[in-house]
Length: 425
Ligand SMILES: [Fe+2]
Image (cartoon, rainbow, N blue to C red):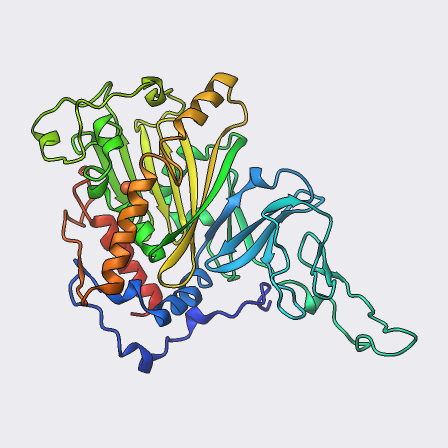
C-alpha cells in the first residue's frame, strides 16, 4: 500500500548534514542552545521532521464536530487543515488547500456544510476531502475543459490519518503511526483518561490568541513546574499550586510527554518558610467570591490538578473543575497561536456548568495565570532575539526516577533529549 495521505516522509531522510554543521548542541543535557528559538531553518525542519513526521497531533475535540456536516478549521503544525464529520459519523481531516491552485479555501472557523467549494475556481470537495466536481470539466461548446483522463481521486485534498481517544482528535500525515495509546505510553494514558474518561463532553468555549515567541517555549512553560510555584500570584496565594503541595512530575519513556500532578490542601497555604521564598505570595490578598476556588471531586484521581503535555502540540489542563485543551500552532520561529478549548461533561447539571464557567476565568488567554505566562514567554523571546548568544540552563532535579518535587527541570530535559533525536541534531 502506498502513502494514503499523499504527504512526503521527510523524517526518514537524513537532514541536510552540511547545513546542520552550522548548529552545535552543547554537550551537556542541562543546556539548551538559543538558536532553537530563533532560527528559520530550524523552524522549517521542525515542520518536516516533527509536525509532518511521526507524531500524533492534537487538532480538536469530537464535540466540536457534533453532527454530520460539522467542520472546524485547525492545523497540523503550521499547516491549515479542516476536520469534519461525514454523513456516517466518521471523522476526517485534510489539508485546507485546494488541489488545483493551492488556495487555502476554507476561511470560516466552524460550521456545517455538505461540500467545500474553493472560491477561486469552484473546485468542490466532499466531507471526506474527495474532489466531487470541477466546473467546465467538458469545456464549453466542445472547447476547452479537462483532459479526458483527468483523475478526480488523484486531485482530491490531501488527507490525514485520524485517531481519537474518548473525544479528543489527533492527526498524522504519516501512515505507519503506532496506535495513539502506544504513542502516549501507559502512564500518560492513565493521566489523559482522568479528563477524557469516556463521558460525552460539552463544549464551553474556544479562544484563540497569538503570542510572540517560539512554540517550544509554551511546551516548556507547562513542563517547567518550578516557575508555577514562583511566578503565579493566583496559584501560590490561593494554594492551587504551591511548592509544598503533594506533587508528582512524570514523563513517558521517550521523554517527549509529561504530566505534573498536584494535590491542593484544604484552604489557603499558611505563610511559612516555603511561602517566604515566593515573591508572588500575598497572604493579605482576598477573593471577592472565594467560591471560584471550590473543588467538586469528579474522578477517582488523587490529584486536584493535572497539567499534561502531549508531544508535540497539546497542553491538557485539569485544574480543580476546569478542563482545557490548548493547541499550539507554530507560526515561524518567533510567533505561535494558541487555540484554547474549554469543556465540561454533557451531563453536568446547571450548577456545575455555572461553576465551570466561573472557574474558567482563572485560565484562558486573559485569565489570572495565562497573562503571567504570556508575558514571561515574550520576555524570553526578546532575550533570544536581541541578546548576545547564551545557552539556557535547566539543571534542577534528577532524571532517573519520577519526581515527587516540582523543583525540577526533568520534563524539560526529557523533551529536549527527544527533540534532538527527532530533529537529527
Ligand atoms: Fe505558568
